[in-house]
Image (cartoon, rainbow, N blue to C red; front, top):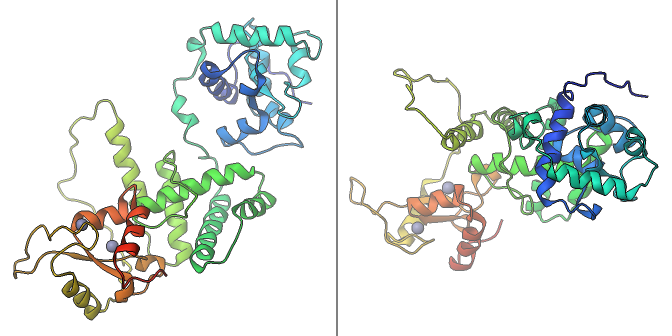
Length: 360
Ligand SMILES: [Zn+2]
Ligand SMILES: [Zn+2]
């Protein structure tokens, strides 16, 4: 059994995080309709909690629910923890009712507490770090992250090789090794997609990049990718996320920057490319981008139309350096092929438009 926290001043830190989550849900809650409530398991997923104990209900009690529920009961606040239910029974745990001295399944009282929660002003009790809610899983261990990255890259390998696989089986295998839910791992996969996208790499179809990754987690993921692929690490994704966080700041003062930029001495993976492939592709393009069909935007010092050669399956994704995998593009299209939201559509466009290309 859990100890009852005697602190009536405020819920503990985990209780406060839980309160933030529940309050953020209130606008969408219909008090008489538990289908709009949240399950014990979903709370774990959203907050990135591991399952401690045999059920998600017991697990959540240990991770903030007990603290928050007692605080509401002792300080006369509405019973907002009634928003958390067992989705099979469509009911909160029995403890919810007994804590407030109610008969189990006293629906009228329960729904009234939810209505009161909606009307109540919770603002003075919320932590102002509500953005923490979105930055899931800074508490993940290196082993959990590594296993996620390994699984992701393996799924990507199978996908490229055209070997059928089920993502859910990969998640289940991870669940078997660590005490996290399958959807916690799935969320992680979307983060890995985002890191890859920021690196200008391909991400696995069906795992749309999710942007709520912290700089530190992104850096760890990127390091792990480099490690697994045995390539040198460059903190590209972490840098880009830091840039995006800066852009989002309400007030961003002109930074000092560095008069003498720092540098790392590191080796970067350089693919030794075949000059004749590049030459052939450029020659065939005749100064016109094979993606947007616009003429090259400028000429080089030696009078050549400036186009770049892009590998449709990137060399970093084990693409071949051959004319059936290379196109001449203008710099805009080239960047869009690496970093654009519609990169996958552009790739399809190229496969349809350029007859010599072969899908790898
Ligand atoms: Zn173009
Ligand atoms: Zn490229």
